[in-house]
Amino acid sequence: MLYAIVDIETTGSYASANGITEIAIAIHDGKEIVHFYETLINPNAQIPYFIQKLTGINNDMVASAPSFSEVAEQIHELLRGKVFVAHNVNFDYSFLKYQLEAAGYTMDARKLCTIRMARKILPGMRSYSLGKLCHQLGINLTNHHRAGGDALATAHLFTMLLQNDKEGVINGMLKGRNREQYLPPHVPVEQVDTLPKVPGVYYFYNNLGKVVYIGKAKNIAKRVKSHFSNNKSGKQKQDFLREIHRISYKETATDLMAHILESTEIRRLWPVYNRSQRGYLPKFCLLIYEDRLGYKRIGIEKNKHVYKAVHTFDTLIEGHNRIRELINEFGLCSRLCNLAKVADCENGVFAEGCTGECAALKNPKHYNKKVDEAIRWMQKQLPTFAFIDKGINDDEQSCILVKKGNFYGMGYITDGVLPDDIDQLQEKLEPMPDNDYIRNLVYKHASTYPEKCVNF
Image (cartoon, rainbow, N blue to C red; front, side, top):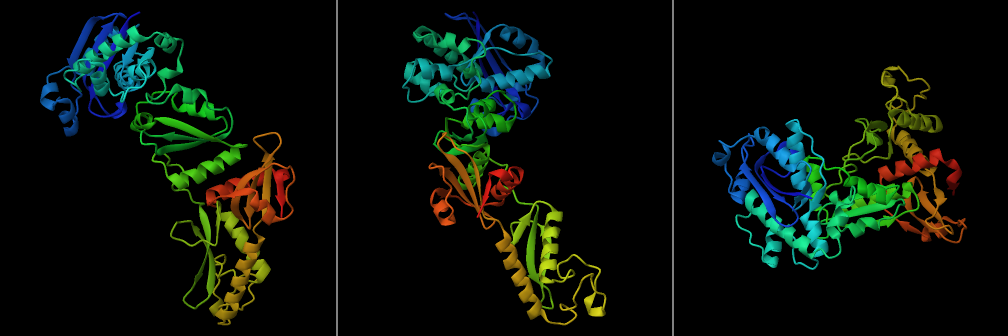
């Protein structure tokens, strides 16, 4: 079996918008290096200044070097049929796969990561970065951060790992489509293997122990593995994979509870890679404001954080229907509720159904009192109910509580009896922050599964 031990230098951290400036490939037969290839590459782009300082490769050095397309055939031939080996293998692999495919060649090799191999074969090292690992093992690393120097050091490390692999770790990694080929280099495979196939929320942590991503899943194990099942060349994916050092999870009884917990945790921790709920707002909101004559008006506007909404809606028609309900129940003015804009009460042009007691009678105090009564009535009409579903264990049920239209919290009822008193039920649940996203989720499920709702 032959191994292609690869190191590259690049203009940036992800393949889809950056180029390769240097490549070195050491062909290893399992005992020693049998062939070595190295070349500078013109990326046809400016090399950032900090990259120049790190690698020592500047624009003048690559000006007369071949472009990748000129050496693609030779590189493809060197890699073809060999096991692809690198320190943090998915980084190098993603660049070469992207560049080779752009040049018209396919690449689908088995991979070995010397970081993952070293963690298993040589546990207990202070650091597994190439420079520090070589220093600890006495491997001569010259010309660090240049492709040739790093590739040769990685090859010597690989030889040492082969010699010390008493448990057959490397053969195990090469069997079939081994999952370790796709995992981020710092995530222990044991953490992935122990993930349950149940609903819940999972957490990705960086090297400092800070949560960088939170996700929810119907099947935690399957969903987590899907994050690592491809090696996309974009910046977000590559940065994301490099950040992950540890995984944890919290199990829930249902997918709805996983949605709720995910939203709550995202808003509590604000992980850097969670973006989907940061800007979430229902599309429309009901507002109360006074006009120049002192009358309280009711209106529906596009929802914004700056508004103090009385109530929120996902559709405009839902908001208009709620206002019409208040008009009919309390005799409010259609014009002052912004549903009859063509009316002109002051000049005798009344809206349909208008009683004439608003602007026409110049009595804002009396009218405003009716508006206040209407809003209090609407808020009292907001539902209080428990959404009951299966529990994690057979001897329990899950419970999600909405109180006066707001999400209160959730938990599990273990005695099988739902308390008749709302206060007693609240004691059995964990209070959680309310937000529009969660509220609409629960309302949607309650509408879809009314048989699971218990009203109070």
